[in-house]
Amino acid sequence: MKIIKKSKYLLAVLLAAAVFCPFNSFAYIIPASRIIEFMTGKYSSVKTLKIIQLNRVVDINQESGNSIENIIYVMSPDLYRSETSGLPHKRLQINNGDSRLSVVDGIINDGEDTAGLPYHFLFVAQNYQETLNYFKEFGINVEKTSLTRYAGKISYLIGDREDESPKLIVDKELFLPLLLKYHDSLFIFSDYRDMMEKDLYPYKVVHLHNGIKEEYSVKGIMVNPPLDLYLFEIPYIRDRFNKSVSE
Image (cartoon, rainbow, N blue to C red; front, side, top):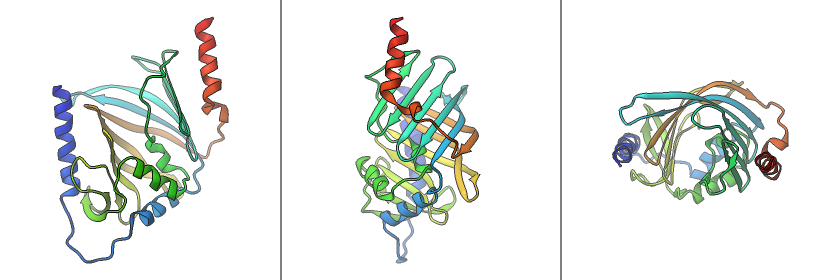
């Protein structure tokens, strides 16, 4: 309970710093649909990604835990595979459209909550209207757009300004996502680096959720590598693991 309370306090501080710097200006602010269109358009040439990153859980005293290597495969528009082989568990997660599968230590966990849009989908080619609809489903009020200052940059804030409200903050000049909050999750994106010509990817991501703080640091990234569809085929993967358990 203390961890959850501290995490909520940290969340409130971060959001207050993000949204309580409004700009009293009569300058025209483009609507959310255009912001999302520009943001997704930056990645129109990125069809697939292979990402190697380190995941680290930070405890209540801000002491670093062990880093676990995570390999992620993403294929536009909605195929995602995450493999974690370190302690304490070997974990596999698949998102294939609306279908999801989680496997921990070779055991299929149908009841595990893996709902939501992996943030990696923001960095591959997407239809901006479908992305806008995803944000609507997350509870972000896409009818509200304002200016704010976040991480020292003038940015667009899509959604309501209240701390607990779902929202998306986008860099005003570069149209890069800086913060995404929905349900019980808050993602903070930083340290953007080149991954292909003008395309940028956040090499550092902080994820606050359910009283837990996780830090993701990219070790390496491949843009548009050839990926086999079977990596994301849930019936095939489910059948393979069921067979291994029965043998």
